Amino acid sequence: MAFDFKKEYKEFYLPKQKPEIVTVPRMNYVAVRGTGDPNEPTGAYQQALAVLYAVAYTIKMSKLTDRRMAGYFDYVVPPLEGFWEQAGTPGYDPAHKEAFRWISVIRLPDFVGQEDFDWAVQTATAKKGLDCSPAEFLTMEEGLCVQMLHVGPYDDEPASVALMDAYIQTKGYVNDLTPQRQHHEIYLSDARRVEPAKRRTVIRHPIRPA
Image (cartoon, rainbow, N blue to C red; front, side):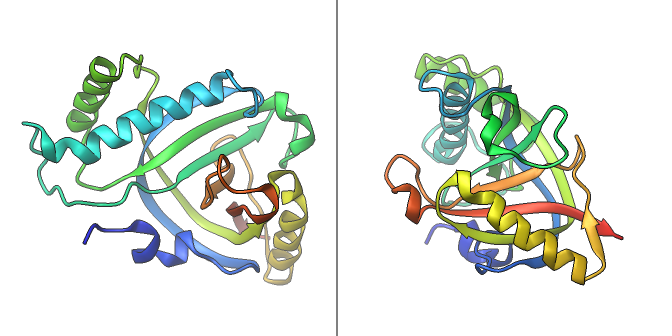
């Protein structure tokens, strides 16, 4: 059976619908950076998603090619994620999507190294007829964070963020949102197929002792 990150690491992908504190270890991602409103049908964000999935699935399906990645195991491609910030805004304001700066990512298994990644970018570009050069191999260690499951439209996330803010205050922490530590979302629902009221999204914020 294929390894499923969501099931094996439930503490990071399947939190409850209430705030909790976690320590997130270092993880590797295929990433594409950009700016602007993610809802623009032909905008940079939609183009980034095409690149991410092309590279992610090229790595997963490498087992059917001559490329042999040391330590390869079959796995379910992890869910789409995003790190978000806005110029001049300390938090996260979905009312001003045009000001977003984002890093859209999909987690990579630990067996994927830089050489394997470079091969996947080149292969995806050649086979998909898509310029995958914006993709980068990104390593992040989020460390101490607060997170919870948000159910509903993305624009309603501030209500869940308010719950997280109140929770960490009672535990002696404050938010630590910086250009290096950003608002993080993990999309458990496919926005193309799930109506807004039923979408399930993990929201995660970096924190530090008050």
